[in-house]
Image (cartoon, rainbow, N blue to C red; front, top):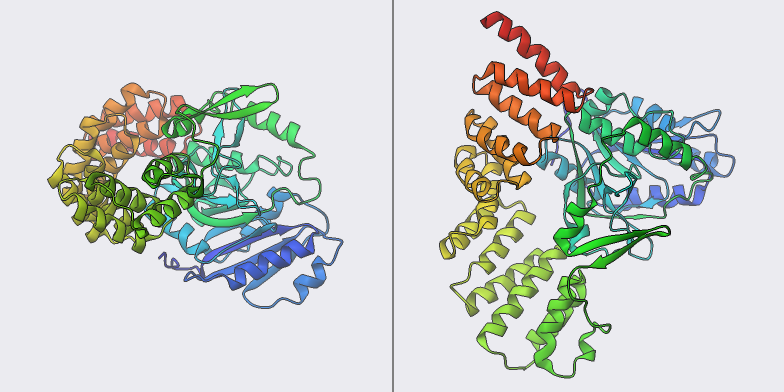
Length: 517
């Protein structure tokens, strides 16, 4: 859990801009008040000159809340900036008033920020009231237009629950470190109720900060309930695409292809298509007349991202008196463990994986599952044992090497972690996560030379990745290669002229090189 920095009264300041729709604001505030959380927080309401019952509602609420009443409707960006200036939290969370939060929502987002210190902005998984996905991160299509990828997917689809780095996330629920917000100067108020959040994320990335999508939150969003929300979309998009021309390159495939998906774009929009064989229309266990087909059904449900249905199918199977071969029994317990892990049911998932171990003591797969469950619980020592056991069964499993490296790094055992990250990077040189974690551990333990080769190899394949060039410059500098570091910083600025981190680093490097010359 993040603890408030010196000089801050709270862990988080929750800033909520409002304009009319008092009933939504009431529901939002009640959900925040009723949600369980360990983090300390304040709520800052910026009333954009509401003309309904909103002023009366805000007048009757007490607690750690500040209300800023404007004389006119400033719009989303300006209201958020005004509210952030009043913040006494180490982090600022921008939240729409048409959202409702759940238990541990704030703790989960803070935990993501703590786990990914390079991320300046954290976004959340948002669901429509019907339980379908509203936001799971922002991707860019082939036309250079940012959009909400995986919109209307099932909430527990693997592509939705996966946390990852992305170009942008929505400010409907956006956690920003106060220092980063100050560095960026807040939202660009030239945007009128749209795309200012995308612009903020792009500016953050241009200055060396990562943007992280947190897939294990549960927040309901009614989306675009404010009056006039879409009135300026055309001019906002035109401003964004002109300002970030050359940077808004298509990146949707890297999120889609990993889950066997693609989008077929046409004049009327995009349609998701599967690259794998489609599942049968009836995906219920009741539709299967032969019990021995239950495992096949569950596998199809799992591939299609319906983990709840897969878990129910498998639990029905294992609780029945059906007789299965040892191999099928192992697969059933293993898949049940995977499904329950996706549903964040850690205790039940652990039991299923242990049952799978009983059925097949030679397979590394249940130990991988046990390691993953331990990581969900942030039990790094248990995760270490699980991944070590998996490697004992199969030394070539890079997923176990990577998981072991993360568990060691989280215990500040960076020198040990480096060995595992190096192996993954050698086997999978384009695995950006492995290369980044190798870089992070190498810098943490003062052995930057271990990261230079992996970063250089990665950049041969992705020469336009300014962030990884910046990492390389840092590793080169720490290893004593001063001139090379300065040259790499220049490369960062060629790719992103506004990269503030590179500007400051190059200035420092040149001053030090002058001293040593």
